[in-house]
Every structure is written in structure tokens, then in C-alpha cells.
Image (cartoon, rainbow, N blue to C red):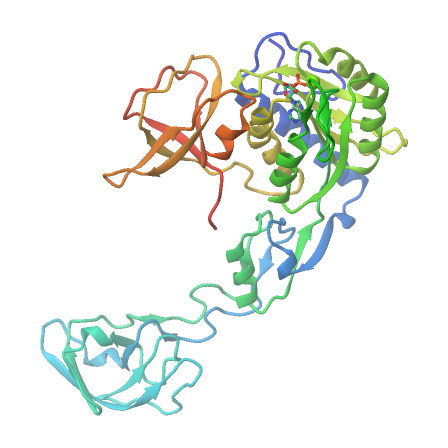
Length: 440
Ligand code: AMP
Ligand code: MG
């Protein structure tokens, strides 16, 4: 079989044998890497922009974010309790009694010094007063009134319940590494450092189009044999989760002239083109012909279900520039579009845009019922994962699993991913599960 791990832009991959999902992913990652290297040679300064935190969600951090301050900025209490000097602690249960000399609140420090035999009532986040290195939490005290508090000598160790200056982050060190797909916690972290803007990679421009004579736009009545174009809408939703610019190229008829014009148009303004439909055996012939003129594209039969036929490669713009664009020709079936996007396109877009972590997260759950599976292909079944009666996660397939049945996807909250060599799954077996929604 052809060595697909070495995808050369000058030798289109035309395969008859089925391609393992992992080989397809490797070939895609290889070509994306080539494109990144080539585009770095052409230009790169304009690939980075500075955005305010409210614009930064799901963008990719372009440079390490260095902390300008120590966090916390000073030693402070991790608990509500009493701060004192740990000299009075010991190894037995003797009761220490300390005089309460005042109170420190978060944002309202105690200015004085705490002496031997004394302590300070302290709230979480309040600065540690001079002379103190330990906090006894309120709930560990044996007795307390307005003026004195008592607790067992061995109830805490010196230094406990105190957050040290610079414990979370030190000034000058990376708080967030370059390549991070920015999540809500990263925005909060940047804000906690007083940073209002982040340097991110520019938004990718992704063109989408649907190909098929039977496709009608929304708002138009359906004539015999026609269907509404749904793929552009699911693709738009998927792409919007990545905060990039979408160029909608609409519906394109299955004829060489229209398709060529659409591809040429997309290649002149986008970084990536994603089409759906027109790559299955019966239809791919003229698409292949156009692709050979416009770029270097392989037509793959992938050993997966759904999503077997897929075209992948790069297009050269006809404007004479050296810039090349990534092309994904996804299958037309609505579920196959989403599966191939999830499995191949998402990671490629993240990689192309500088992300360091491109794999979607994966977990496992227990099959509630048997699942039929033939070895020799990777399957993406639509399912609902939930917590079972004993607290462990269980998973159950949603209805009919046909590649065209979008309802199976809409009702599901995860894929059950059955690897290439796997056979039938029995009730109670653990299976791989990829959740549709990330919570954080
Ligand atoms: P194709 O890959 O072009 O052979 O299409 C496979 C199946 O998906 C056919 O039943 C098409 O009608 C359907 N299909 C293709 N494109 C779309 C689309 N944009 N929206 C909904 N269904 C589609
Ligand atoms: Mg078609």
C-alpha cells in the first residue's frame, strides 16, 4: 500500500484499499505541518493579533503569557480561623490558649504585629499579619470567645492553612503556555493577573459549500427528489465553536463549471475549504478532474463508519500567489459530515492555527446493551452517556444509526468510538466515549 504517512503535495493519493483512520489522521497532520512551514516562510507577523479578553474565547494563544506579578501577591490565610506563630505548637494534645488581639479581613489587613501568646482572628484571603506563620481553622478550635481561643497543640503543623506569596504563579513565569485553546478559566486567569489583552493567532478563514443538484436552500419549496441543504448549518455550528471566520459559499450544482468556479473562488479568499457531498464513488470522477487542475487532492476510502469516502489535500490559488489552502471534501451524508469533521477536520484546524493540543478529549463508559461491530473499521455510534445506578457512567445508542439520520446525532450527547480491530461489544463492556460538549 502507498505510504500515506508521507503525503507529498506533488503526488496525489488515489487509493483503492481502505485507509485506517489513524493513517488518515497522520497524513492530514503531515500536510498541515507542511502548510504551516510554507506559510511561515511567506509571512508570519500578520498571523498574530492582540484581542481583549471578551474576544479571546476559543482563540489560540500565540505567545506564552508571562505573569507580571506574584500570585498571591503576599502571604495570606487559606481558611477562616486564627493566625499565630507556630512556636507554640507541639506533638501532644495539650491545649494552647491564645489571646485574640484583633481581626483581619480580606482587603482589610491588620497593621500590628502579633506577639507570643497572641493570635489574630483572620478571614480567608486576609493578609497574614507580621509575626504569624500558621492558621488554625475555626472548626478545629476547642473553645473560643471574644478574647481567647484554645486548641490542641498538635491540631495543625507550622505553616499550615497559609498561602505563600507566589505559590500559584511567580512573576516572569508562564501563566498560560503558547498554543492553548483559550477557555473560560484562561480568561479569568489572565484577568487575575491584571492582563486585559491577549496575543492570539489570527482567525482562520474557512470556506464552506454544499454540493449536490438535489439540494435546496432554506426558504425555497421542495420539488420532487430535492432536499434541504442541512450540512452547511451543522458545519457552521461546528466551526463557530472554534471562533473562526466562516465564508459561506452556498450550494453548488454538480457540474464541473460551477464546482470549479466555487473552488477557485474559495481558494482565493480562504485558508481552508470544506465541502460536503460529491466525493462518493458515483460522483467523484469530475471532482477528481477539477482537483487535479487546482491542486493536489487524494480521494480516500477510509475504513470507518459513517464517513467512508473523503477527499483531502490542498488547492493552489489561481491568483499566482504561493499560498495554498487546505481542502476537505467531506461525504454528503449529514451524520458522516459531523463524524468526519470531529475525527479529522477539527484537529487539522486547531493544528493549522497553532494549537498545541488538538485531540478531542475522550473517556469511557459501560455499554448498557450489546453493540454489533465488524472488525476492520472504526465506528462512531451516536449514544447517550449518563450515570448508572451504581454511579458508574453507562452508555446507550440512540435509535437508528444510519449515516443520513441526523436525529440519532441530535438526540445523542456522545459518540461511542469502536476501534478498528474491535468486534461485537457485550453488555457491561467498557467502551470509548467522546462527549459532544465540553463543560469548561
Ligand atoms: P453524496 O456524498 O453527494 O453522494 O451524498 C450522500 C447523501 O447525502 C445523499 O443522500 C445526499 O442527498 C445527501 N446530502 C448531500 N449533501 C447534503 C447536504 N448539504 N444536506 C443534506 N443532505 C445532503
Ligand atoms: Mg451528491
